[in-house]
Image 1 (cartoon, rainbow, N blue to C red):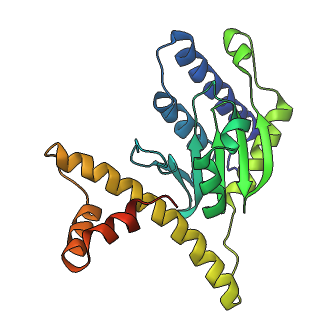
Image 2: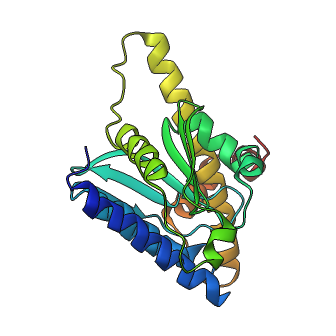
Length: 229
């Protein structure tokens, strides 16, 4: 799948590790500042791979941090967490549970560990390196880990949606998307209400909310959008 020689690919891995180590060693970094090295790393593996960072969300749910494309076709998402986060705990978080139920092909990562989730099932769980390795100037990512990671990347980027063959399958797919859209709309509206309060520009979700208020009792609208799922 990857369109480079193994030697060239190996160099991409070592360059990625060095970049993460450099930023980590300063102590002056956030989850967001490590996204660019990850984006550059993944895109360096194959010219057809493309990651697009999603707008930063600040409320409870958020949106996956990256959309992933192969030859301009969207194939899934990547969600990043701080490098010192325990991904086992993150898998049980409300946010990731919602992603797992709503998104068929997603990678969860803290930049060193990568978990590929497919249809709410864990397919790959790979540690490229540990936090202790970031303190070593001589550490290199092993051939075995590189090959395992490339296998995961191949599965991730060659994902194709299954053809819907029955009304029941269609209903299940629509239900999954509706749950995610409901949560995203609720979160965006909460953010918009704060913006309006601060005389800032809101999104079209707020305009839609205001339009509905003209047609339906405000109490019903508030409950429909903001009540817990």
